[in-house]
Image (tube, rainbow, N blue to C red):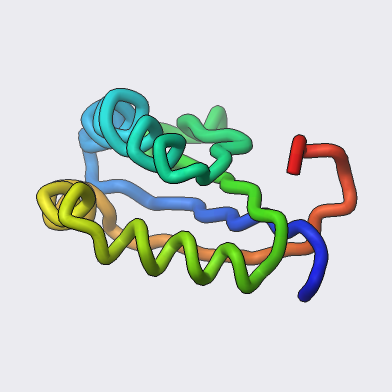
Length: 105
């Protein structure tokens, strides 16, 4: 894929874990992503229930997505969060889709 892509994840969180997941994302993880030039297109809790959350990130190309995410998730900055975040996640679904809209990419 040579054009812009959206990396979308939906999470089913452990019972009672959504508030903490949201706090960690807003206060810690989102600023880390943005410092690395990764655009957060949207995120937040589902309106349909109290266990789901979504996060969408935009990238100029699929290869740039792979490069940036490999660097981010391999970083010393992320490592202290990996176990904390995944302890709140029961399951997740991941999509990478072409983006033909204007997401500022």
